[in-house]
Length: 391
Image (cartoon, rainbow, N blue to C red; front, side):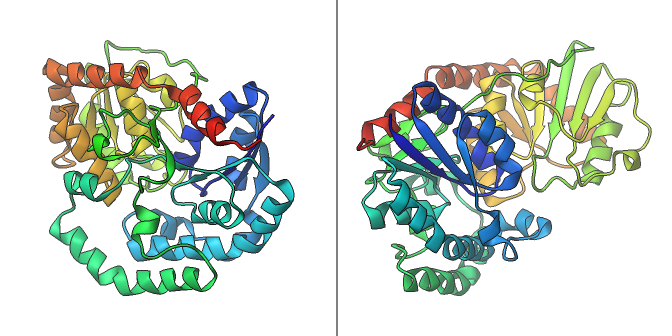
């Protein structure tokens, strides 16, 4: 039996893809400890890991809901949050690892404290990358506009200040690329296919492109019309009442069934009276909906896009952050979705109709799905981790 430790950041999008790997490791008789945060406890324990809370170390320094939503588009803020968290966790975490002596540490690519502990203690390490793997080649393909590049330049003094804080405490980071970029010397699991990953041939054989981690359906969805449109802006930056109202106006009394998942920041009653073909929920079983959907209006978080394409569902894309814009650009390159040009109800309706009428979008989504399903999945990710275990 091997002892394996996972570290992650407090984000569902970074946690969900790892849970299938945890289940696979536990099913093979290995022991898994998972360092994370209370909102993720239930799902981590259900996957079979021993949950280890980090909340008590970061209480008082954690970002608020609004600040957390802004982090995805604010590099300086993101790095400051990571630095604060790393320095708060470091003493207790290092003590735990010395006592536990794990055979391998698996850490999210943003959880720099996991890699630092592995390097300091000489423990085999695997990086878990729930977005596209990022290097100088893939960054050129994904691209950023002038506005994003200018914002990055202005943020660099603040970013470098945080990097120096980490360096002062012994963290092995030379610059911000050590946090953002994937290197070819680190064993890495990426939760997408080589075909969907931009410039996948520029990454070393230490990379496993395991494909999306798709959990079983937990709640069956009933399709009441021939065509089902699903609308969700994810779990973080989803306070989008105006957009939801425009979607309701677009699909009201049409031949489409529309399901909206709006999160807990939106007052559903404020969205007005709903036509019989539209339902609005705080939360849905996204896998269950996508299994039946024909079109997905999405913010283009990596997990949502992976799940949509796994089921061959083309996307109408409404990205908010640079990362989401990069994912949307890749979907557009492969012909599996379109960017929403405006929030006017007529434009919303036209975008959905276009994806259903032009067969190429569905065909391209299904082609990506086939590549996803050929990936090694949780089994391949578990094999990678166990190949490095020293126990």
